[in-house]
Length: 210
Image 1: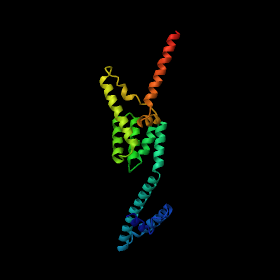
Image 2: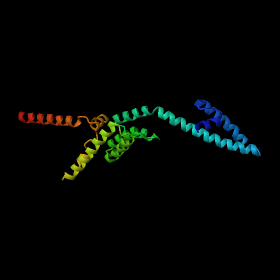
Image 3: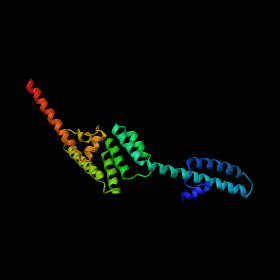
Image 4: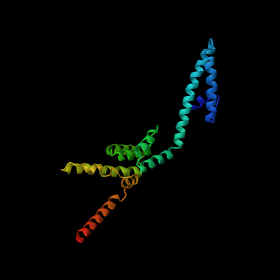
């Protein structure tokens, strides 16, 4: 179908952007002038002008989409970099630029939602990623970890008589690597427990010194 649009310009799909732009301007000027001619000549020119505008927009859209796909991995790398830097707005803006959203897109969107503390929305995005690519262990592991965390938070909030609900914000300020480590089955909890044990030991030593 796209080849038909190139024929309107008298070109093929190997034409450069510059060639298409130059031909577009040339034909537009020609048809714009001829459409005011009397009789069939004017009617044909008006029709040709409409075809030209349609073909031009379709070709531009197709080339933009192909260029975007070619640079998709670079875009994902930029999104991950912004998440690591804590620039969630920039990461979201890049995600919003995608027209076709594959499993990796939904995974990264889940990370952004998680950073915003929108855990249920993050879970939904992971479910979509798994539905699109059920063999991806990264998605399944992340989903299981997040699902367990959500269940733990519900349990804590139910039993927390003080009403503080602190469980929902335990990871609000973690960085991207922490998220990846914990979601991918890392030993973040073990490290945290070791740090707490060390702190308690230091406090006991201080008390004895007094």
